[in-house]
Length: 173
Image (cartoon, rainbow, N blue to C red; front, side):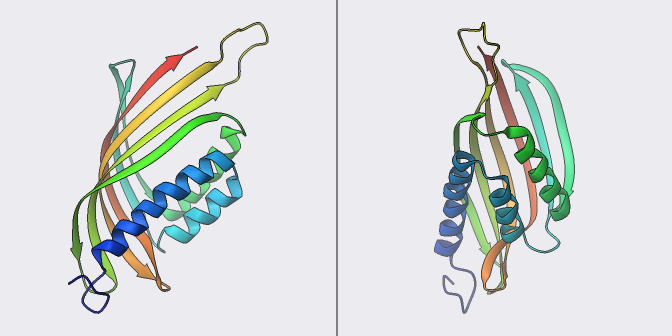
């Protein structure tokens, strides 16, 4: 059941998700908002939808929760906003890792994959000229997700996604 004739190969799914991690790191280091938009457009299937529930902690204290449903168009617009707000040099450190928990093939054109994403971002906030130390915001995000991956135009793309996770924020400076 690991061939394209019977279903999407688990190894292809693993390589695709690993490529996402590598490309995300490259995009964050390069800071190219247009590249981020192009990547999103290419890697999200037509009609893709995301349901995300995120609990937020700041310095170990629960400060809020976010629940949202986003479609591909929403994500493209948010990516443009993020690219504009982030600014070159504001991301001091970034990593994205994935742990695959389960892969279930649904024929040669689709598979469901359960994963845990681990994302680490250090934002470098601008500091006043009189400040000796730069201000940092550290975000560590862990989310359990179930993705429907689709073969679209001969390549894998992310379709429906359900995620639940935690974001831990800390301030330094």
